Each structure stands twice: as structure tokens, then as C-alpha cells.
Amino acid sequence: MHNLDVAFSALSDPTRRAILARLALGEATVMELVKPFELTQPAISRHLKVLENAGLIVRRVEGTKHPCRLAEHGIAEIDRWLEMLRTALTRNYDRLDQVLAELKSEMKSDRGEETR
Amino acid sequence: MSKLTLKTEGEKHVVVTRRFAAPPEAVYRAHTDPALVQKWMLGPEGWTMPVCQMDPRPGGKIRYEWSNAKGGGFYLTGECLVLDPPHRIVHVERMHLPDPTPDNHVESTFEPDGGGGTLMTMRMTLPDAETRRQMLSTGMEHGMEASYVRLENEILAARV
Figure 1 (cartoon, each protein chain N blue to C red):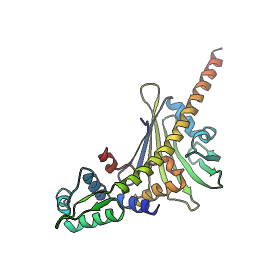
Figure 2: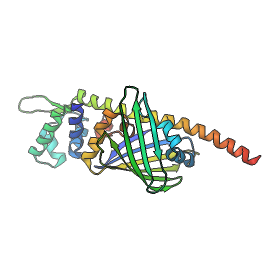
Figure 3: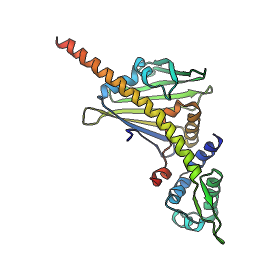
Figure 4: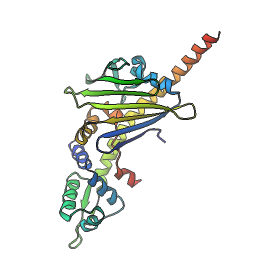
């Protein structure tokens, strides 16, 4: 629960969401992220730190570079959470479909009585 | 394939859409007649809605209470603002957990889909991004609020 809270907090920032969207396409270094986002390197690094602490990205060391990529585990956790939400809402509306089907037959019989 | 879409929009909004195989008149009625609402707005399996009050007129009060077999429960209060049958409902609501959450402003529209059915669009507006984040994360603990929202994000869309 705590992890999810941190994850959603990290996701509340549009720049961080955009960074994740970029990383969804593949690994990138800080410098590679600086260009498209038109932010300073320290600003990008701060965002990456938040994402890393939230378990959404991981970094590896490659000489002097530290390429980032999406953390499958962190993303999977959010995926599961979203799935729970979707399931609960889908249940509600499936029940509503049933209610509407009942209304339909009710309205039909009402109309039937009127024309009699 | 799911008929449901849920996404966040900007900083403060959550938008849900769903198609129904019934005309707007019926969908509107199922959202404003408490006896009908009580049949479907139950959230996850195992929850019931012992209290369902909805007074569909401007200023009319809303009160929904949910409970589960384990003795858990919480409630929601709200007020109707605009009723434009059968196409539009605007209301505000807040959860009591038991402290009230900030007001969620909800506009629901029901449009004919051209094939005898209805396209519902429910657009929620929270006071700010932080409130939305809290609503989305408390939703998980309380299941019910969870019925209404999903954090859609570019990340997941980009991964597909």
C-alpha cells in the first residue's frame, strides 16, 4: 500500500509520466532525456530519483553512464491495481446492464397495457 | 473486450465512459431512482448497499452507505446540482472514511449512440492533483470509490 502511494505520487507529475512514456520505448541515459524534455540535467536527475525511489525505474551502470529503464515489478504492481479498479467498475456496470434489461421489459409491458 | 474506458485528464479530472444497450431515458432513470441505484452500485463482490438515498432535484441530497459481511463500511454524501433528464446529471459527492474527502464534482451525460443505446460519459473534477492522487489511492483500500476511477497513464498506453 505504501509503495503504491509513493508510486502514484511519483506519477502525479506530468514530466515524470512523460519520462516513463519515453522509457517505455527503451533505455535512456540522463543526457538522452535532457534533450527532448528541454530541462536541465539536475532537473531530470531529480525526477529520475523520484521515479527510482517509487520503484518505477531502475538504473544500471555502464562505465560512466547510468542508463534507466522501466522497472517491470513496479509497473506490474500499478497494472494490478488498475485491474482491480477496472474490475470493480465493470461489475457495477454489468449489474446496471441487468437493471436496464429489466426496465426494458417493464416499459414494454407498460406500453402494452396502454394500447389495450 | 471491455466496454469501459477510464482515464485521467489534465491534473484534476477522471473521465469514465461506458456504452449501454438501452436508451438515455432508461440509463438516466437507473442513475436517479434510488431503488434502481441500489441494485447495481455495489462495487466489488461481497458488498451491499443498505442505505441508498437520492433526491433527484437541484439541491436534493444523496446518501449511499455500503457495508460488507465483515462489519466494514463507509458512506458517501452529496448534493444534486443540475438535473436535465434524460441527458445530464451534475452532482457533488464526498466519501466519509470517516473523515470527509474533498468534494468530487461529477458530471454525467447520457447521449444516444445512434443504435438505440446510450453512451455515458462521467467526468469527475477534483480540487487539485493531490486530491485526485489521494482519491485514487484510498480507493484501493475502500474498494467502493475504486468503482469509479482508474488512473490511466501514458506509461501503460505506451507499453501496449
